[in-house]
Amino acid sequence: MCGCATVLVKYILFLFNLLFVLGAIAFIALGVVFKLNIDEVTEALEKNNINFSIAPTLAIVVGCVVFVIAFFGCCGAIRESTCMLTTYAIILLTIFILQVALGVYAFLQYKDSNEEIRRDISQELTKTFNKYNPNKNTEVEEAVDVLQSKLECCGPENPNFWNGKFTGNAAPSSCCPGEPADCRIGAGAYSEGCVPKLFSFLEDSVKIVGIVVIVIAAVELGGAIIALCLSSSIRNAERRGNYA
Image 1: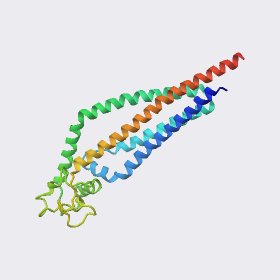
Image 2: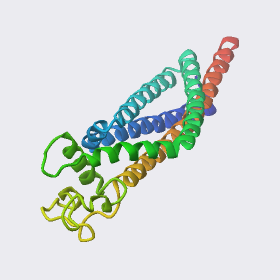
Image 3: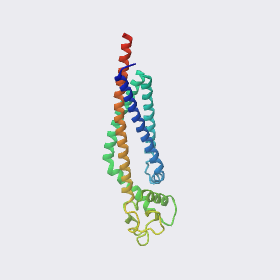
């Protein structure tokens, strides 16, 4: 096969697949980091009937699938196989359509149930915080301490939750950096509640995932178009060779 245009398209496809691979690695890394950094928080949330453990696993799986597809596209370009390139383009377009449909659905669902999700999280966490007993060391106390320590928060909605539950303005040691024995509200304790802190963390995570998905979708669409162009160019070159 010859022709500057075809060679250019071939290398552009390589570039798109490189972006694909980087996007896949970003997704896998996002899932791994999320999983490693909040394992304890996830465990504590599961004790409160709040399950977020599927999110990082899903990100890792999606990243692996994207990586395999990118590898398939590279093979098609290297071998100059019209069959592989066309199949690659169809796979990308199918995934792109599914991503757009699922993305729109997820956005609408999240927008409609935003307050409901926050209310459910608040109710579940408040139930657990109400069971907290500083003189015991059960799963409840451990879950509350992990959440407050890892998320750097105090109380479900604000630190004032602990007023009356401890003498003076004292709070659990997990409410303060370094978890000192004498932790006090307004004198070292975290000023933000765990519900707004957790919800803010989830919103930031959703935004990051959304940006990564949009970038990958754009690369998918571009990769599909370029793959079809390269496949068409290879076919035209083969036809010219047959007529020569």
